[in-house]
Image (cartoon, rainbow, N blue to C red):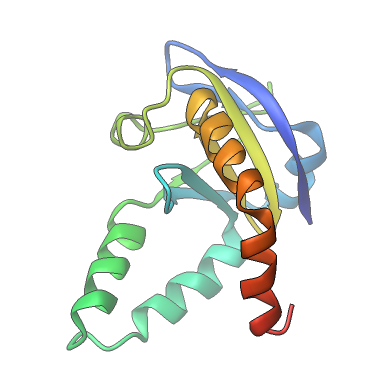
Amino acid sequence: MFIGEYNHNLDAKGRVAIPVKFRTALKGGAVVTRGVDNCLTVYSADQWGNIAARLADLPATNQNARAYTRLMLAGAMAVDIDRSGRIVIPQYLRKFANLSGPVILAGLYNRIEIWNEKDWQAYCKKTESEAVNIANELTDLGV
């Protein structure tokens, strides 16, 4: 399970350290891909296999299904954790999420999101100001 918020730096080679608490779950490999809200999403290899299979089963005749499948699958890259606990984020993904320097790694139970630090702060500020409305909508979904 991935939980918590961690501040790290993306180095000039596109490497970012994975928090120690997350590394065990990623020992079998990891996949990084485009996420929603202009961040990146990191999945364990096992979790990614489940997600990719569900995406592959979406109907190719549905425009939104095709678009989301392309976003997720074509953007995906398998990554390895090096001896220092880092992964290399490909340039096209760094560009997509506007990553350089300070980044945030946010644990979201079955995945990790990687955010530009300023974008994360703005997102949190906006979300916190709308927390009551968000909670009300989630009640309708059974949460």
